[in-house]
Length: 148
Image 1 (cartoon, rainbow, N blue to C red):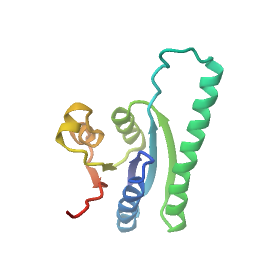
Image 2: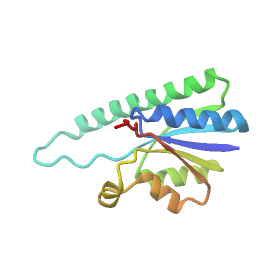
Image 3: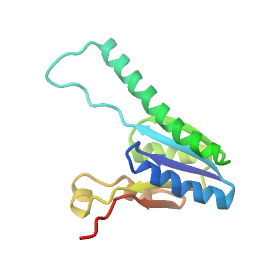
């Protein structure tokens, strides 16, 4: 069984990885840990040389891929089959196309739980995946609730 685990490299990623690890331990699944690097908007208001932009973007991608590989290293150290992936593109569309390409039977993502107004104005990647995915999507709640 193949499971695609999409992480955003925020502090919440550890919770998503932990949930995917538990599923892999129970099922013996292969995990594909994916970070989608969304394309940067063009700079507005000043000109930066294309060489500078390409170099900075390459450095950002190398740093992001190294973070994904750290998560994968913790999984493989625990005996979980896992592979790191970094793909550029729009988040939901890229996750769905990679899941299809890998033959993933599940997708695991986190939800920051910003609330209905935020989701209505900005959108929710996890909600978009749940609506469009042909395979089950496990959504891990990652927001820290403070009792009050």
